Length: 481
Image 1 (cartoon, rainbow, N blue to C red):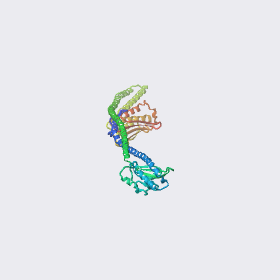
Image 2: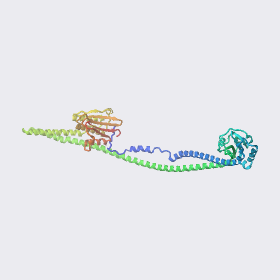
Image 3: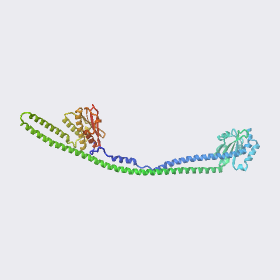
């Protein structure tokens, strides 16, 4: 249904847009940015710190263990290698060699550092051990032992679990297990593998200090990075909050201005309505003045001429009087036609179908032509029109049908009414010679007036035509306008 209050041709911005968009922009404020960063960033930073700390700690342990093992292996090889060269040609040590090794490892400078020693031959055979019970026994070769036979030194800190290490593990002391290849001084080939266990209480203490220092450094770096990033995010959050407050202020200002615009728009709409009604009153006054003034005077003149004609002598005067009487009759008829066109019938309170039928029947009587009518859904819905909209509809159909009669000869005149959702469309068309819309300009006062009248109540005006195919004029109103 069209609404009562008409709109101007170019309405001012609607306050509803700003008021409806403001909640979408502002909305319920989420958790502050710095808190979200502290939660998610802190978790990520903690995970990264743990991964980095464990990796650095493992690398420190591996390198410290390897360096200590290399030093111990070189030290031990300087004692063992010269004594065990006979293993390059034998699978067992001579008794005097065994005695020499036992004496060697009982000396204070070795006994204080080395917990036990074993010398291996290929196949897992122990040819010497500081524990005589293990000498001559065979064990399964371990990956560390195989690596030493391949010429690679292997060291393992405080992780003893093999069968032959039960004795060392039982002592409850931190040990550094080292597998060191023994090379032949003549050929350089590996002739045996020395396995020894270094007492590593001091090494373990130093390693623990190094690892704790690495954890402290990693934690300090990560915390420093987190504090720096948190400070950056906090400053950014403060900037965002400041901008958010400024945005709220500006949106409030926009809403205030929109309210002012809405008030101005209502005033413009009211002015348009009053102008339309004032114009209609002027037209009615002109109609009354034409009807009651010139029309009456001309009628009186016609009557007096009728009386005068009876007194005129025979001759040419009769013809002249007849011409005057005919001209006066035509003038009276034209003035009455103008009066009927300017004056609106009583349409206030009528439905849309009633208004359309009223203007169509009037056109048919005046022109003697027929207008095809298709009210469609408008006939059933029968919407009630406010006075200004009823005037607009009546004048639109009246002018469009008048154009169809004058320019299209009244051929194929058709008026239709359609409703689609909240849109009401009324169209008037003919099957006359048509026209080129590009040739329509500001001098076509009738069409320009129709467009302004329709747009003044918020409607849409369309003009369609093509030479040889007739013309079509339509107006569309939306419910709530």
